[in-house]
Length: 150
Image (cartoon, rainbow, N blue to C red):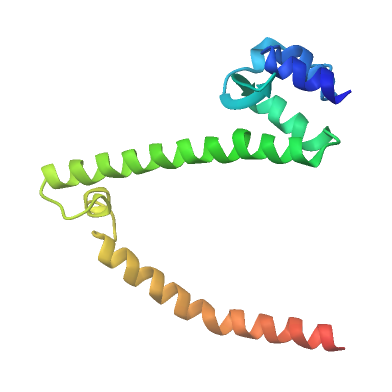
């Protein structure tokens, strides 16, 4: 019933599209994370909105691999791209806050009153922990390799 599914998406009817995707419990309250997609109908591009729950239903249940691929591309990858842009913006705000207060980076600003004191000290602490755990990790790997060969 792919035609009904595509028609429901093109007509921006999430409930009908969800039903076609096998989601009988879909309701309008689940539209808290809109994801945009494009679909073709009669050779015209149409913007549609897919919520995260509907994208999940399409990925799990739609029989057509191309439709699942498109849903992944527009429903997951585009949302990740938006989140990465937001993450970049937050990082820039952190750098500006640190600079205004006279610190070389945001981690120095945040760590100033901690036991570490700076990002350089945090990096050094991580290196020391990694070195201390390396011997145990190598021993565990050797034991697993021996178990696999037995």
